[in-house]
Length: 186
Picture 1 (spheres, one colour):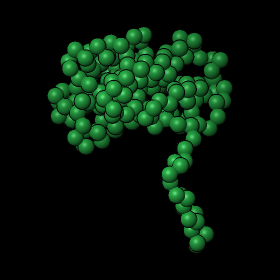
Picture 2 (cartoon, one colour; picture 1 turned 90 degrees about the vertical axis):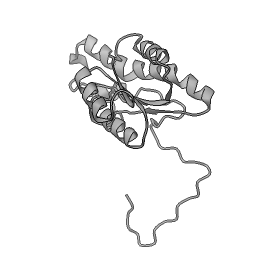
Picture 3 (cartoon, helix red, strand yellow; picture 1 turned 30 degrees about the vertical axis):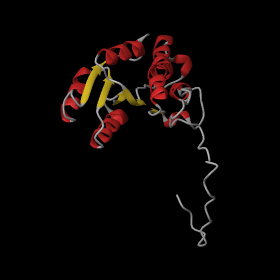
Picture 4 (cartoon, one colour; picture 1 turned 30 degrees about the horizontal axis):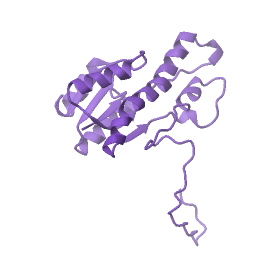
């Protein structure tokens, strides 16, 4: 079993890969940039523990291709970190349509297809998790000047995912007692 991290070649994806490897997880690293993936894999202990796979998840059927690649190697996924994403600044009506489609393909379609590809086996095993990383730009408001907020916020939460628009209060948790000093707790 391995943790699959998409968008692993830089940023949050790279940080997830490093943190998971530090906890002893075996990894599948997925991104478009071969050179960065190879370097990260080597730093994390090589392909035996951090398998680098170069793949553009914005392309149609990339999730199915990735699933076939892993099945052919006998690799199962216990944690899916849907981190790959892109956002463009500027006015939506001034963005080229193909650029917006590519963004939606990566930020929404790839998340859904990767989850659909790997979640059934997790359910069958009775364990596993899906973590959807979304942009903070998704939360304020969807203005005409921020295409990222209109795509990264649309990735639907999945069972076991951390992507939720509002925190949900657990029914079993007891209410917190207010501080008597009147100071704020952040």
